[in-house]
Image (tube, rainbow, N blue to C red; front, top):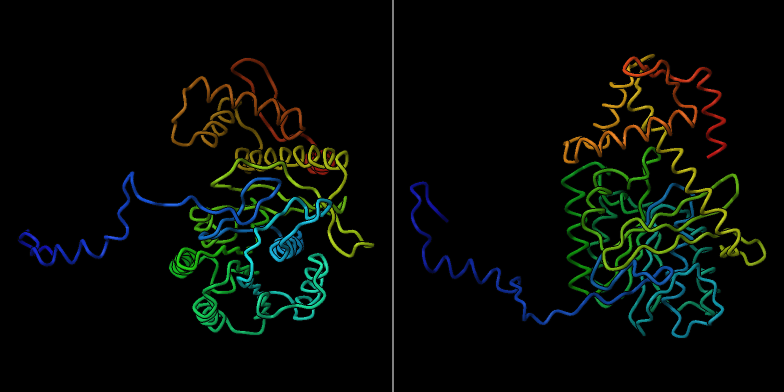
Length: 371
């Protein structure tokens, strides 16, 4: 190390220091293979060997069902052409084990999910050496983490890990230190074992982001992330691309539960198109509502100039865009908020004011139904 008086590093120490990093140097001639796709959704790579990926969504949105299709297609060497797997196709890896760890559901529900997976894969009896299913719901947090370390060391030849409930391995989803440590550890093991590790995590209901600091770290480090949503009124579910590092975003998948089939199935093209359009409109309405709440706050009246300035600051907080672009965006949003009955614009010219629309609560409820 360098001393306080900035003496030069000892030559032998420098050599040791460089040896430590020899394996990490990359040149334009380095023999490095591209990531091998493991799971695709509607033709786009979501998860690869040697990397971690995430499935997020609200509780009961359908995350466990989606993992079932990932597991089932990973077990199938030959996929039937008419197989309805919600557009999900996993890469067959021969006898390399597949591991599913459930930290959330009752063991009976885990077994039920297992039976659905086997049925869809056309397998009468589970081969425990090839498909290992574990339920760790009753284990305390510390033991879950210790078991995960041992499992990854024991089953080094596993090609796929699906872990349902990643935040159960840390003391808190917002603990920065333990979250970073866990994500880093899983990235390391995915690379070392050339395995695909898929992790399930809940979303924050307010903004749809993955839960806690561990979710923020996941968004920065993962190879891919998809979001599972549910329209409870229409009883429809959606698989949406959240972040795909090695592929273009896919067209969202729309599906529903079929009692006859006893599992989730894709909807027809017309239903899918209509549902996606409604989802788009709902999303736009939700974004407008959040923007209105942030910019109007508790004020009962604002000058139009002040309200527009708040929208501009929300849109471009660091003032990186040209003034004309900021102003054009803000004026468009003011018109959209007025059209959607969130605000009323009074007066004319520079004397215009903005205030919450009369009977706002009732109209907002009506607006929710429209979107």
